[in-house]
Amino acid sequence: MVTIGTDRLTKTYGDVVAVDGVSLDVAEGEVVALLGPTGCGKSTILRLVAGLEQPTAGHVLLDGRIADELSTRERRVAMVFQDYALYPHLTVAQNIGFPLRSDPEPGVDIPARVAEVARHLGIVELLDRRPRQLSGGERQRVAVARAIVRQPAAFLLDEPLSNLDAGLRAQLRTEVAALARRLGVTTLHVTHDQVEAMTMADRVAVLRRGSLQQIGTPARLYADPRTLFVAAFLGSPRPSLAQAAVYAEPDRVVVDLGSQTIELPRDDPRWAPLADRHTERVTVVLRPEALTPVAPGAVRGPELRGTVRSVENLGHESLVRVDIGALPAAPAQSRLELPEPGRHLTEPPGDRAPGARPAAWSAGTATAGTGGAGPMRPLRQALARMIPSRRPAEVPATARTEYGFYPVYDPELPAEAAGADLVVRLAGPARVRRGESMVLAVDLARMLLFDRAGERITLP
Ligand code: ADP
Ligand code: MG
Image (cartoon, rainbow, N blue to C red):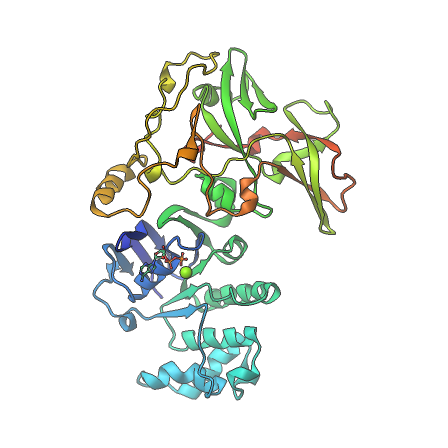
């Protein structure tokens, strides 16, 4: 068993930055999922860890030691790919034993090892069959068995379940995670399926365009997403993202959704941090658990009114989509692509007096920044100079508005995340119908706000 680390791991292919300064640590025996949309660099990270690729910059660490010089074999990692190929002319037992036969380990009793691995995967009765006599799930189990037969120190899984149907995928992801834990094998599991990542992994690393957005336990990522991208990527149903602006007035703070507002009284602990953001454009994320249908005026606290757009009856619960008249916001592009905060505003945020709404904002010249916050900034700037970027140097013209910049539509996010309808969860069959109006009480403690760069605005 090993620990796996990456230290500012970077891989470029010509102009394409496939992996962009990723640093993460996987503890011995831990299962970590690499989660992100297609093309975000997940497979490249796995290939770098396996030694199938060499980093452009940064390092892979195994047990804390730089592994750059080690061959794939010396790294003792096993990989399972989506398009695993079994040898059609060999039996299951011969397929599983193949790695041991082609590269013998001294003192290993091959049939005994094959039998042991087959037992682990519940495929003992299949050992004499050929691959064409197996179902998709059985074949995938054989592929996993073949990968672990050499008793790897680490297990690298690259979307191994994505060719399977939904039911089988759910079953196998539980089995594979249980197997990795039983054998105590350090595991990196790549997937673009957030449910798979959240259910299998001890920790999930969310990636976007080659860089690490956040790593943490599934519960932590869900409850405390640091970026809009992470918030938008997790959760079922996906949360909707609504554009809003913050206005501080002497006796209250208003989160203005355009058609309606969420108001916080002066004595609310969130007043101060929000007042600092007077006139700033923000994105509001309200997940189903932040919303409760109520009778109008029945509870104290903020309410949003809307019209039921659709009802999805799932039997045990219903998902009701409510149009509250808000504008959808998709996450801002990565900070590398954004202008420096404030650069494009003719009126610097600090100069605005509380209570004054922005009258004279106008879009200035778009200048692609090399931003990034905190300690990463010098590194990012250095990398940006060193590495030719595949990213557009200019923010698309559509991103310009009278207020400066909207977050722009992000094709990496699922279509559901681009809507501004609120989703409400009701137990059992819904008694509301399309077109009916609904009043939703908003739990302010569960309201998530993000700034224009897509960074979370933390509220007490
Ligand atoms: P993921 O597994 O998350 O879908 P990949 O790691 O396969 O993403 O790819 C990340 C990016 O690097 C993509 O833009 C992809 O096109 C690019 N890429 C991957 N491998 C190569 C390669 N051998 N040559 C050129 N570009 C590559
Ligand atoms: Mg991939």
